[in-house]
Length: 441
Image (cartoon, rainbow, N blue to C red):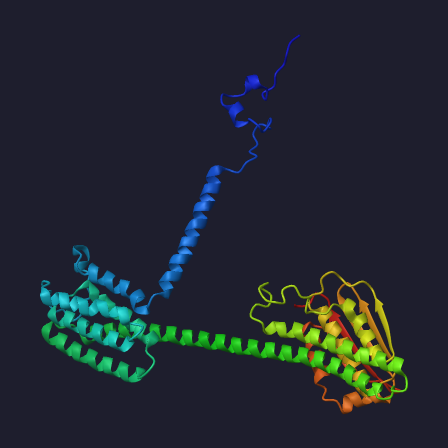
């Protein structure tokens, strides 16, 4: 009998294959079941380099601004003594070149080192560099450090805050004096050449001024966004407080008023007082959830309320809200159609607040009148309708402050829905809202 062996049999394996596959069974030829060791090592190196870069960047930006601005001045200082860069200095006026001596070292230091304070003391930095530049040109050194003049002009135009026009006027007068001196000492450059160099200096100052204007506009924009964000958050918290406090306190007041007339019926009196207690506890719970928003650890899992129930009321809790209103003496018929989707964003909270505000108004202005609550869940929207019979509901539109209804209208409008509230023919008051599902949280 002839025995056939495949490429995967032990006789056809290359040397060392048994060691690679020991303990792992046979593998399909051509497949790599383990990630490349080189790739994992490279990812680890990249991760470590990224961490080092972040740490170094954090340390660098924590240094004083003078320390961070000093390296550029040192580069110009060192470059001025390199033979390859010594002949690449700025030359205006045509003054003959002069060999570097001890005074040249002082000029180079005066041109380069003041760059370290170009952001802390921009006026001083520009004055020192300008003086060094004037000496450099008048004495004929023409050092590489003379290029610091353009850099310090950009920086001063960007960071100088006071007496900007007076400073520019003084620099212009100084430049005119320098041009006159150079025209007498040099080979006689034309006025057009001096004007061209002056325009280049003005361009550098203008670039710095543009950076200053852009930075200031960005700071103002950020401040405006921060103020608008704070105001929006305060408005939102104020609405939440209004909804929570008004509803619960109204229910408690109505229940307490009813309890005054139940002294002859101890059982009903006990039920009424129990309802007041339950409403008070519910108010405390809702307020605690709301005030958790002001806790810096809110949402991080570090606060004391990390294990508390969610702040946002779900539409499924509407039945509890309706039952609480019934116990306050308001006959409420509740109908809920459809199945709430798993994720509705903030739509469920807005629907809850619409029902809550409508029932609060019914308690305040039409106590004892029949009230109907209908909530319909669709695939793309939630529809809420709360109607109250009786003429007392009309007083909600006339005598009420309207703050609650106005806040509801804004909430629904933010989500792109529709809201209406008003009296109906024959007496009564109806609140309707169509809220798109999946609104912003």
